[in-house]
Length: 292
Image (tube, rainbow, N blue to C red; front, side, top):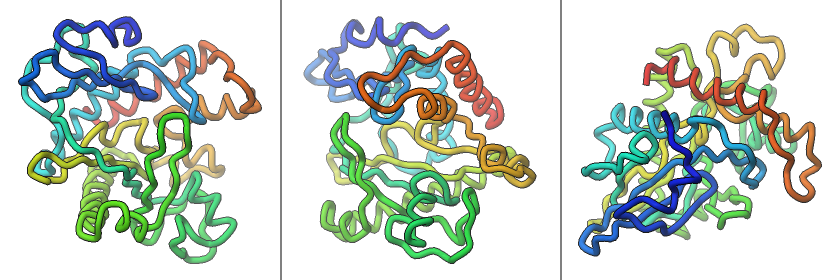
């Protein structure tokens, strides 16, 4: 059973709370010799840059389980995981991680056109400035996966889509090329694994950091429902509407409800119980489909 994330986030014996993002809480060891970070996933859910209430039951545990599973599938890719015992109070939703110098880039890879990419394509025939063939429809597979990076904005601000040239300015040519190549390689492998399970990995985003030796390491969460769009492959083939083809295993239910019931002015409304339950069911279903 998942413990309440909000109730324990700042009171883990032996650990000192240092930062909270929209979903995760970071803790540093009280032992000055221990440089590891405890990354705890909460049940919080965010949309349109707001943290919403109530949270999604067991979401933190499900996201952590999925990240751990994907890190295991990608065990040859250097990552942030560190050895050690995780405190029992957060054992189901926490990971021990190396302390890294995080890079300010959201490494987005798109295999299919939808979301903000579809909106841009309709206006200009491009996605993040990259030209695409005419005649694509919402949800279509792209000719090849695209690396479409974003600059990681401070909490409460929108991430900014940027060009590859801007990535070079931010981190240097060699590191930029490494980020692009590793991101595309991981996406291709993960998409193939998902396809074997009857799923489409439409897009995803990765975060990376460097360790003391300068090694690039995959960090944060990986290929979860919060960082990726997964669709049912059969529904994508046979569906007759975008909502049928692209029913995703994530918080899209929350986004759709908010878009229909909130004008984005002031504080967002409380989520109805059925929206919370349906979203939790989608998170769990993805875990079951992948066999994670």
